[in-house]
Amino acid sequence: MALGGNPVFNGKTFRSATRGNQSSGLGTATYAGTGVANQQQLEHMYNQPSAGPAQTGRMTFDDVIVKTLLCLGVVLVGAAIPAFVLPGLALPLMVIGALGGFVLGLVNAFRREPSPALILAYAALEGLFVGGITMYLEARFPGIALQAVLGTLVVFGVTLALFKSGKVRATPKAMKFFMIAIISYAAFSLVNLGLMLFGATEGMFGLRSSAIPGTEGMFGFENGIPFGLVIGLFAICLAAFSLIIDFTSISQGVRQGAPQKYSWTAAFGLTVTLIWLYVEILRLLAILRGSD
Image (cartoon, rainbow, N blue to C red):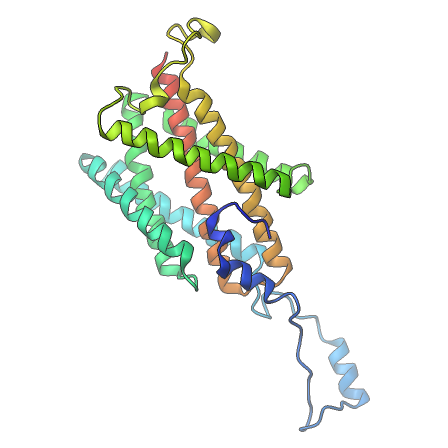
């Protein structure tokens, strides 16, 4: 199992579910109260089709795909509320979605058993947040929503292709770097949020909106390269590698025979990462458009 990545897959519940099925096998069939089968019964057993993962109650890639699409569909429905149904309440709905999604995200990540209802509720709340922030930025930078969606799809597609080709893997050395990088990024985000809340910075995105000293006029940026450009590209790379970790965890879960119910956990983990990726791309585009 790929450790150190998405906490949804890194939790003890998902790991124990996959490890607990590595040595599991089919039980011994008995006939007429005995453990001995005659030749006719053996031939009948031999001619029967092999039971697949779905018949034995194990997680499959199809399960994960269907449930992930369902979660993303709920995100889109939630996003449509502040975008089209109640646009006048986009800001409060965004705040409700952000806070509620954060709480439910923690609850789902550390539950002993996956709860489809709570996972879909998380998706709906995150939809409120995504829809609110998207429409707020779309009003300032027309066309940014479509650009962010296309960017997310491109990064996801490229990451999946690299994973399937075997060119990118979550090796132990890469995982150590990822852990250091994600902790550093989380610390920066908390500090930046604190500065924004206390009014210590003037830009829309705090320190991200400031320019790197000495870069005036470089690459077409008259006021200097935005610090958020560097941080944004770094965060997108982290989110992309997090997808690699998610793919690795799902593949191992399917291969080791995790129970079918954990396909909800896998779908939840992918949804978390994709939302993070989308928000980072959206913010990066806003910083670039704002510096024009």
